[in-house]
Image 1 (cartoon, helix red, strand yellow):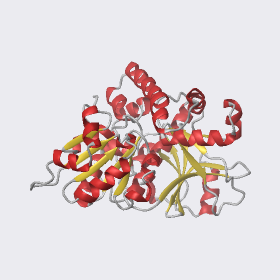
Image 2 (cartoon, rainbow, N blue to C red; image 1 turned 60 degrees about the horizontal axis):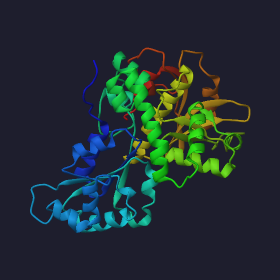
Image 3 (cartoon, rainbow, N blue to C red; image 1 turned 135 degrees about the vertical axis):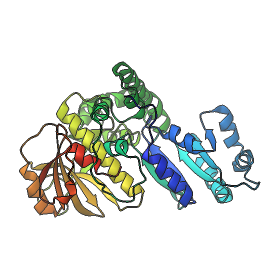
Image 4 (spheres, helix red, strand yellow; image 1 turned 90 degrees about the vertical axis):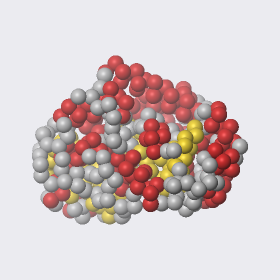
Length: 402
């Protein structure tokens, strides 16, 4: 049965933030991931920079917005204001600083937009201490099983309905195509989203002029999810220099088209230290099942490590391992600067990779998993095992709290 409504973990996370913290909540993430819908649902007042009337209100200054919200009169509870796409305003930092410093005792503030953390970083020290970042990701197995505000990293395994898993696998984790579950709709939705990213967001949020070449780079990268990036080779293909390619891939990462993970080299002899790996944010259009499985797992892991970090549960990083003898493990999660978990991604069941044992001994990782997509859920705690083991991805990913 197709879901008509979804309760998102981020709704509970932001409710807790608004109840417990005076700081503004900055909600970043991919276009169409559900930020605006979520924040409008939480807010008492909503101002969108792309709405002419709302823009005029913002341009009138903090006091005009405060008067609109009736902040100068006694109220039973603090109203919640959502400001959408305000980073498009050249003086958005000054506006937020002035509004927050004057009115934060009388209201709570949500700030959201279509771009990633990199846009908000331009705020610099002028907003220091006045906001917390929440990076919003598409749906995952754990979130579909039980939307929650995590207080820990790992939870008990919980099975996902097979129909829901197949929808997540086929249509991806973006809420609208996942809920619609219609192939024709999904194709049209993906085409429009890609066009908006390359012809709208890239023009508005970057200084790149060569948008046709950027789109060509995007098409090349769409077929290379899970592969190491050799910047010089890409530069030759696009006919630009290495520095330009690096800047453009950084821009595509900031626009949430994909993401890079770096090689981990601490305590790893003869490790590679330069070439990152690239992954798409949306696995739905990847045809090869092995590549799709690796990207599916990569997106789940990135959601977990960024969410745990944003919630103050530690400092986490997603990396990979590869040495000069070409031994490789797809992913390693770093917890507070220490190697914690190794994950090898597979679509179909295969013999246990010897690289897991090799790198576990070298890095001191507590856990080493070979996560297989095409395996049935098993009601067994993966994290009770500390030697390399083959596990169903449905079980392992259900145990991540985001």
